[in-house]
Image 1 (cartoon, rainbow, N blue to C red):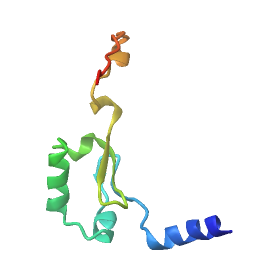
Image 2: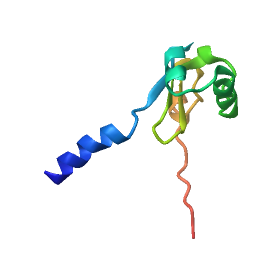
Image 3: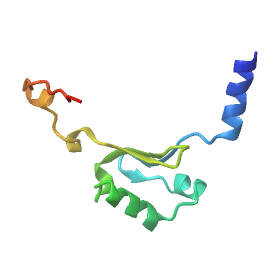
Image 4: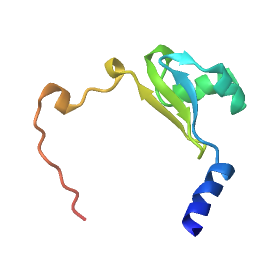
Length: 94
């Protein structure tokens, strides 16, 4: 009972993540909801290395205040698995 009550209160007290970009288009309603000016939002994207919003699949402002950006598949960094390259495992020795 206590755990279920905690989960219900959590959704009342905390905001859910707010979508700010959907498929490359800026969601102005989302920006208005979180009271974030467009120029400040674009500055936050530039800090993360995003200069063109059309390359972004989705950007959300998490309830912790952190901006999460998911690039479109054709703009994400290339991984060794994408090129069928086997990489040698590296270990950190302490």
